Image 1 (tube, rainbow, N blue to C red):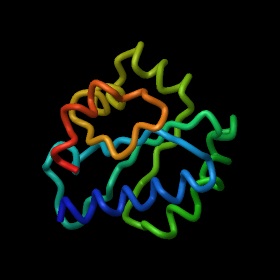
Image 2 (image 1 turned 120 degrees about the vertical axis):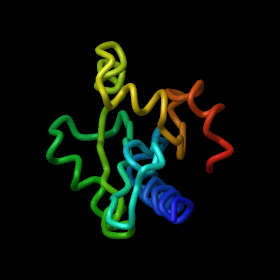
Image 3 (image 1 turned 30 degrees about the vertical axis):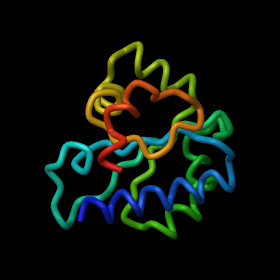
Image 4 (image 1 turned 180 degrees about the horizontal axis):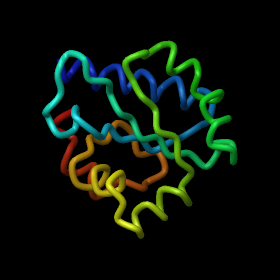
Length: 121
């Protein structure tokens, strides 16, 4: 079940990269922690410098990925927003850096975490 969820997240990332170019993406939430169930969605944090400034309009940019992988919940952030989350040590940042499963790190934002999670992918 976990492998299928991670494959679905990877498929979503591929679609997003077709629109936005390279991104950094990490699965967070229950699939990263391992406490998921069959009703859990896959929380996917995606960081791209090409996201629209308006957070609501960003969903237009990832719409095709959401259609292709309906069980994936995309959380779109710009690199500046992600860096701010890291500085503030928010729950999203903590989850992404400590428990997250790196799907892609095209922006080299998750290098340290990627080393620890490659085996899970």
